Structures are given as structure tokens and as C-alpha cells.
Amino acid sequence: MSSDSDEVAQARDGAVGRPDGGGRGAVTRALILETAMASFRDRGYDRTTMRDIARTAGVSVGNAYHYFGSKEELVQEFYAAIQAGHRQRAAEVLTSRDFTDRFRGVLHAGVDEMAPYHAFAGSFIKVAILPSSPSSPFSAESTAARAAAVGLFRDVVEGSDKRPGPLARNLPELLWLAYLGITLFWVHDTSPNQARTRRLIDSTARLVSRLVSLSRLPGSRLVTDDIGSLLADLRLPEVKAAGRIGTSAR
Amino acid sequence: MSSDSDEVAQARDGAVGRPDGGGRGAVTRALILETAMASFRDRGYDRTTMRDIARTAGVSVGNAYHYFGSKEELVQEFYAAIQAGHRQRAAEVLTSRDFTDRFRGVLHAGVDEMAPYHAFAGSFIKVAILPSSPSSPFSAESTAARAAAVGLFRDVVEGSDKRPGPLARNLPELLWLAYLGITLFWVHDTSPNQARTRRLIDSTARLVSRLVSLSRLPGSRLVTDDIGSLLADLRLPEVKAAGRIGTSAR
DNA sequence: CCGCAGAGTTGAACGTGTTCAACTATAGGT
DNA sequence: ACCTATAGTTGAACACGTTCAACTCTGCGG
Image (cartoon, rainbow over all chains, first blue to last red; front, top):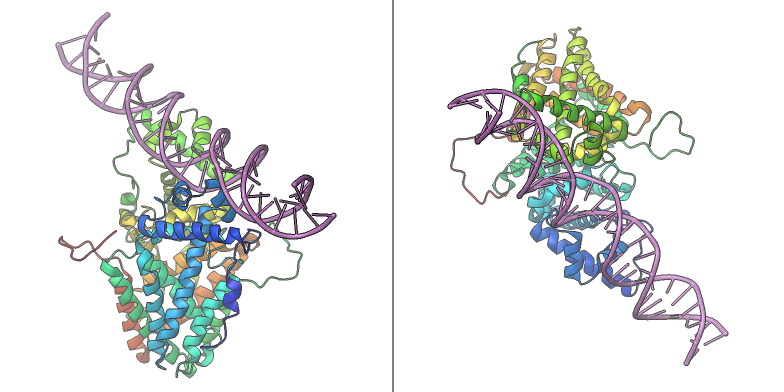
């Protein structure tokens, strides 16, 4: 219950240079987006064609491309909507002060939010996993969205009664990584109602809680230090000044 | 240095029902495959079109589709080749008996094997991440390949001098999961020569080694039990008899 | 030598995501 | 009222992955 809300504002508007206009264009844009969302929801990603969207929305294909650079860009709006929904649900669920409950609750809230789209998650995720895609959780474009997500887990930690000890600085990021892993599992989970993901969430929350407690014991110094440097490696390099060296590529 | 080699044999031949023939067809198939591999390597996935492959190989497009059901199927062969290469490199590297060295070595060997294709890994991975894809590490079709990969890490554990304690049963699978994570990171790693992935590997090996040692301490019982049940949730459900209940879906 | 079954092979055709030069509508200045 | 710059819009056209009915080739029994 703190920290963010401007991070979120920045998280919108990932696609630069594309028109949105305040006038007539905005309504067309919204119309196309809603049509696409609806079609994604009840026909799936692959079976929704750009021509379908355009025809249903009563515009031309070219017009859709005027507002959205690609079909994938339509999916990105989807992600943004889901993340916003997750934040909202999480806020409703973060009542207890027990760490396990809080973490568990936020994880379940995320899965709850995504549930309606599980059948098509498989098509969506390939958009998110592509390093070149702006909606990749690791891309530079989604820095703001990532910060918002990590902030969500910072709330989990800070609002709890658990003393995170030496992990304090890194814990929110670790929890976020766990959430990503669970999401990945959820996508592949074909069990009825994704029941296995629910079980996995419970196991994960229990385990993580215990590990955090253990990490405060004196013997854990070396391990927590290792985790710190591992996360340092993992963390996206802050955008340095200029002058990169090496073959770097692309 | 044990365990497998028949698992591997089964790992081939993922696509069922497709011709391979012993005679004329086999050479055409090989020709198409080699052409595709070469083109993937030096033009990338997206910029390699099926028409290109066919023209360069001197066959028709339809013919290529006679041997490979899709462009993605061509990529799957790629994965198989890389995994085989990984196993070979790993065998050369598994000389020490020190656990950290062994684990570290196998991880580096994997990245070494993939290195030439890093520029196009981004295009490839979307094929692997798709749950519907047979080359997904979690798919039923790749059970054999998965078993072989986990077997590789079983060799890491069993050939080492580390006593894995209560984690023994689960450790190989955990190491494999770590390897998957590192691969995912590698795909997104834009640092020169993927240096950051190399650092991450070293950090990971050190941390995992320490955690395994810690897990043998008496106070870790609860944690290792949790890990066991978490992995039980994680593990793909063995194909049960019949009669599934529920809305199941797809 | 013929016939023929099956493997091997062809290329036109389909539906897709995407592009773009051209068109129309709108608003603000004169 | 006219002009004009800009926003909004169009649909034909392109390159791609994929399909398929039709074709050719090969080996073999009669």
C-alpha cells in the first residue's frame, strides 16, 4: 500500500510515436481495441485475424494498423490491462500481516486475473517471451511496468510482520521472479481449473516464507551474500552513459 | 557418466507419421535439413523463408513440407542437435569430482554449444515456449529429451563428492530447472559475448553448492520437505490410466 | 515388355500479417 | 466562402507459411 502509482502512470503508452489523439481518433482506437479484446477472449489469438477485427469494428485493415503497429501490439494492451487488474485485486487481498498469507494472496490474485484467458495464454506468451518484444518482462520498454510489478511485492514484504533480514533489499525482486515462474507454469498447466498451479502457489509461499526465516540465522550469511551477487548479475544493467565496446551485436 | 543413452535414442524422431525412408527420400530430407540449418545459422529464423530453403536445396516448397510438417519442425531438429552437442561437451568437461566445478562446467558447456545461434535465439525460443509445441521442454512429446537432460544433471550429482543429503532425489531436477532459467536469461542477454550469462552461471553454481551443503544440516528438514512437495506439484503428472474428470478444457 | 502401386515431387492457390500511396474529412486561418 | 495542413481512412498489393490435387519416378510381379 505505498510506493507506486506514478510508476503505473508511466507504464501505459508503451508504443511510442503512434497516434492516439484526443478527438475522433481516440474513439476509433478504442473501438478497435475493444473489438480485438473481445475476439481474443472468445475466439483466441490465432483465430482472430486482423481482417476480422477490422470488419467487426467497421473499419478498414489499414486503419487498424494506423493505431496499432502490429497484432502483437494489441496483445500488449492486454497485458497492461491484466497487470492493472492484478494490482487492484492484490490491494483487496493484502489485509493480513502474515507474510505467507500476503505472498500467497498476491500470487493467487494474479492467477485469478489471468484465468479467463488461460485457453489462449499459449498464443499470448510467445509475444511476451520474445526478447525483441516490448512486452517482454525483461525489455527496456517495460521498465516501468516491471518496477510496478516489483513494487507490488515490495508491498507484500513491507506490510508484513516478517523481518526479512539480510534479504530485505532483494526480496521483492525474488518474489517477482517466483511470480514469473508460476505464471510460466500456469500457461502450461492443463489440469482442470489449473488446480495444479494453485497447489504450486501454496507450496511456494510456504517454502519461501521458511527460507526467509532461515536466512536470518547467522550461518546463512554466505548464502544471502551469494544471492545478492547473483541478483546483481541478473538485474538488468542500468543504462550507462554511452560508448559500448565489443561486438555487441544487432 | 551413466544412466542414459537409450533415453537419448528415444529422444529422436519426435514427429510421428512423417516419412523418412531409407532410400531416395532420406537424402532429400537430409539435404533440406542441412540447407535449412545453414540458412538459420547465417540469416536467422525469420529471414529464412521456406521458399528460400526449397530454392537453395533445389526442391519445391511442397517437397519440403512432405518431410517437415512445418517450419517449426525444422527448428526442433535444431534443438535435438544442440542437446546432443551439449551432452558431448558435458562428457568432456565432467572430469573433476568437485560439485561446483561439475555443475558449472555443464552449464557453461550448454551455453558454449548454443553460442553460435545467440543472435537468432530470440526467434527460436518462441517455438520452444509454446505449450502446444512438441519442442516445449514441458510437453509430453519431449518426455524422452527431458529425461535425457535431467539425466545429464544426475551425472553431475552422482559423479561428484558432494553428499546431497535429503535433496538427493530431487537435486537433478532442480539443477535442470536452474539450467532452463539460465537459458532463458541467455536468450535475453545482450552483453558482449553474453558475458553476463557467464557470470550468472558462476554465481549460480556457487550458490547452489552452498545451499545443498546447508540442506544437510538438521534444521533444514522442513525446508527440504517443502522442496520435495513443491517439486511434486511441479512435476508433470504421470499419464494416469483413463477417466479424467472435470471441465478439463484445452 | 507391360501394368501398377506407392514413394517422391510439383507449383498453383489459399489465408494470413503487414505496407503504402492515395483518398476523404475536419478544423483553423484568411 | 475558400484554402490548406493535418488527422483519419481506404483497399489493393506484397511476402509469407501452408495445403493439396495432380504429376513423375521407381521397382517389381506377371
